[in-house]
Image 1 (tube, rainbow, N blue to C red):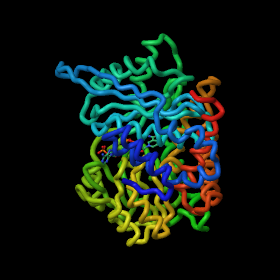
Image 2 (cartoon, rainbow, N blue to C red):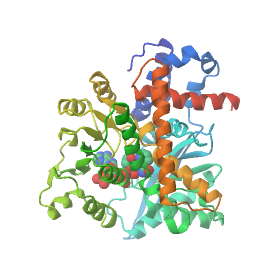
Image 3 (cartoon, rainbow, N blue to C red):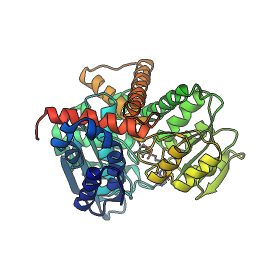
Image 4 (tube, rainbow, N blue to C red):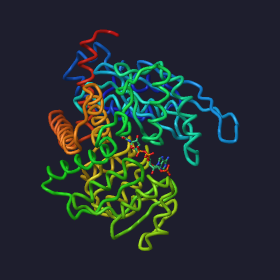
Length: 449
Ligand code: NDP
């Protein structure tokens, strides 16, 4: 059980744990935010009176549904679908869909909760939600993926709409899945409502830069962290965990800016290539062949594959966790510190455990939480929605410039808020407080709803 200096927040945390039993990821995400809010309550008693924190910690709506489908052998399979619509004070619910066997209500609730703060930090009119299923896409044929997505959307469609709730991709949900989901939504509603899903293909309403946005945005945020320290990315050694959408475009942008990425991974193990990761090869294996990262070393002899190893043992200046929650623990953090790592920024959602965050803060490592550093994806989704609404399509350069501006704005908001509330350089406090104040103010303005 966490101990807060503030008794009121401690009691509140205990109440939330009791009301939401067996949801460890949700408890962890709430604990981290509450840990930043003590000074806010002192300065803004109105948030206490209107119970803004309690309201934010109780999702507006939680939907759980059965997803029946048939595999290629004709067997009936049953999965569970989720959509947690956490908060819509700032705009329609917005947040991705995750298909992974580790998905539970707790995982989706933590993600929806985080998403609310993240979306607020972008400065765009977006509420927060998250959804998904415990379905495992690994090894499934295109036909199986399509039937699963169609069944999933057959229930979910009634809860969506461009002014209601707008999902996107996340782990296990890329452009192929968004296509099948959008097709079924269109069929069920008889409406070509482009703005109901983001991450679409370029031929049918998608936006340039959306695919790259989370990874590119993360690196733009890191550039700002370095700039404050009068440093830059050129010549820095980086380690990026994962090899999915976020990891691939993080590696691409680091390399474009002159950094050297020496390792990436998937759930099977780590590829270490001290000469620098061959990104074209990673894209071929992961995006084209949908294969495993261990195939990298078969084609590039200088790389080494380390099955089941911790990527954080590899020396680097900048560490960028881009795979999944709780993938970097206290022991990993100590290894990074010992090897001279100076900057850690989260591409994934909550990949760093609380004890690892503590290690970074104690050792002066600049640490950026995902709700700030990986917000480029959802921000560019909002740009996709803008283009859909105006029946327009912007150029890559224009959209990328806007993404850069948005990430600079988020960095500044977090940095200045941390300073204002007496913890300079603490991006966790900066992000939590700035996100919370924005949502809480809107909630108060809208009344008790
Ligand atoms: P992808 O499915 O494209 O890639 C996920 C990567 O992480 C894969 O390499 C996968 O390996 C690895 N991974 C997933 N689960 C585990 C696990 N339990 N243990 C070890 N490795 C794992 O997903 P994304 O790149 O889209 O998402 C990555 C992270 O970024 C997630 O936390 C997501 O919530 C977050 N994020 C994504 C955004 C987006 O725009 N896509 C926006 C903001 C945040 P394997 O193939 O072996 O499973």
